[in-house]
Length: 307
Image (cartoon, rainbow, N blue to C red; front, top):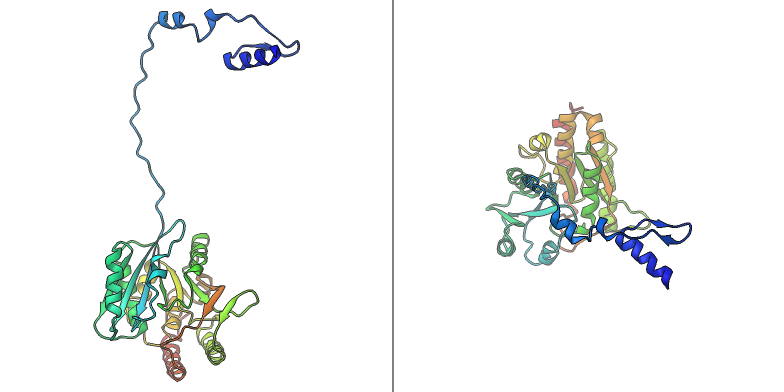
């Protein structure tokens, strides 16, 4: 018990202990900081000059704006899913483009905007212009505000928002990448639910598109894409697209035109998504494949000198 008391005294009073013999040197209160009389008799110490307080500086949080084209989405727009989007380390906001809807879509979007104007904005197009022009007009509007990244995401959420962090991670970790495209690759361990007819037609189309672009691209038509905001992006979206149906292909063609084929190949990244599913009410019909072939011919003719 006496040894324990000695150890406590040595620890608390900062007394030098003889650890080999377990004994303490005599304690002199006159030389201790606990000697109040000594403290009172000491000459006053001049206060050190105060340093100006430095303002706290926080690292800026990267901002992502997602453009969401909407046409007659009143019944299937999952408002709560958009409200619940949150990605650690990023500010995410939305710009909904109402593409001349004939139902109550505009009212739904305006109500969502009014609930949180800092996160949700609405661009209303009086006449239906097609997805390509709706997305382009949304990008032009989004680039008027500061944003590190801008993307577009289909309103039906066939690609769920759970995939969004993976897109952002590619852009954050690989500064050379300017465009991240979702790819619907049916692999073990992934949930890619697609109607067989659309899958096989899509594979034929993808082969033709890859040949036209001169790039080994697997899936240009997944409705989830993110871009790094820079001057190249501004030029890509500066003028209307030739195609209403496969403008995604034309976006890639414009990157090839501006950067060259080899550089574009290194700046575009296909990210296989873990989940994707067909959603009832899709605006794409089977006969649109013929229109897409015609648009592909127009794109190839317009950009064939690129690269």
